[in-house]
Image 1: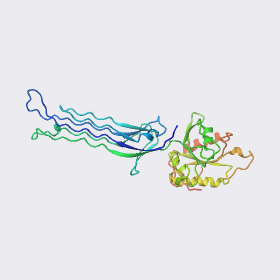
Image 2 (image 1 turned 135 degrees about the vertical axis):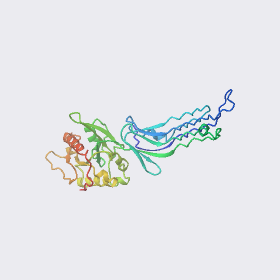
Image 3 (image 1 turned 90 degrees about the horizontal axis):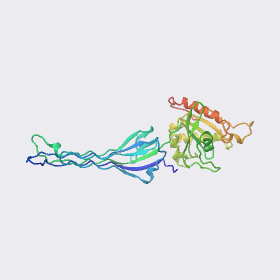
Length: 338
C-alpha cells in the first residue's frame, strides 16, 4: 500500500441560491402580494476522522473538492433546496492547516472528530421578505452569498504509544516484527524502512500497546537529510520513545547522543518524552562478554536485547508497559540532556 502522509487540497464551498422576485397571480386576486421565496444554502465542506483510513492517498489525485450551490428561490414562497455538504474523510491523527498562512485549524485525533473548513454561502432573501405595511410591493431581492474557498494542508501524524528511534540498520524493523504481528521489510542495507510501520504488542492479561517504527535517523535529519525529518512527525504523538543503539557500533554513546540531539533539534517536546535505551543485537556478543556502557541519566532504563534471538523481549515489554503507565502524568518541564 502506498503511504501518503501529507497533502494540499483546495476546498470550495457552494454559493447560496438567489432569492426570487415574484408576485402572487391567481384567479379573482387582481393585486396579489409579493411571494418570492428565499434561496437555498450552499453546501459546506467538512474534514472528518475516519478510523477505516490509514493514509491520505485519496487526496493525491483529487486536489480540488467543491460543494454544490443552493437552488434559487421560487414563487409561491417556495424556498430553494439547500445543497448537500461534502465530507473529506481522513485518518485519525490528521492535523489540518491553512496552506497559505500555516495556521493550525485543528487536530482530528479521535474517530468522528469533525472540522468545518469551508462554510457554504447563505441563501438570498426573496422579495416577500421585504414587504412592509408601507411598502407592499417590493421589487427587492438578494443574491446568494459566496461560499468560502481556501487551500488546506493535511498532515498525518500516526497515533502510537511507543516510538522507535534509531539509525539505519539499528534493528528497528526486526524488533517490530519480533514484538508484534507486523511484517516490515527487513534487509542488510540502510533505509529498508521507507514508510512508518505500526504494530500491536500483546502482553499477558489482555494488555497491549501500539508501537511505531519510522525510517532511520541520520545526522542532520532535522534539516531534511535522509528520511528522518519527514517522518519524525509520526513519533510526536507517542507517549514513550525507545532509542535503539546497536552493540556493534563504533561508539554507542555517540549514537545515543546523536539521536537525542536530532530529536531535540526537531522538537523540544519530543526530546522531553520518557524514554528507554535499547542496546540491540545482543546476540553478536558472547553471553559472558561485557556490554558497552551508555551514559543516559534521563532514560528510565538501559536494556540489552536481541530481536533475532528473542533475548530480553519480555523484560522490554514489561518495562515499556510500566513506563506508559507512568507517562499518563504531565511531563516535567525540563529533562536535561545527558
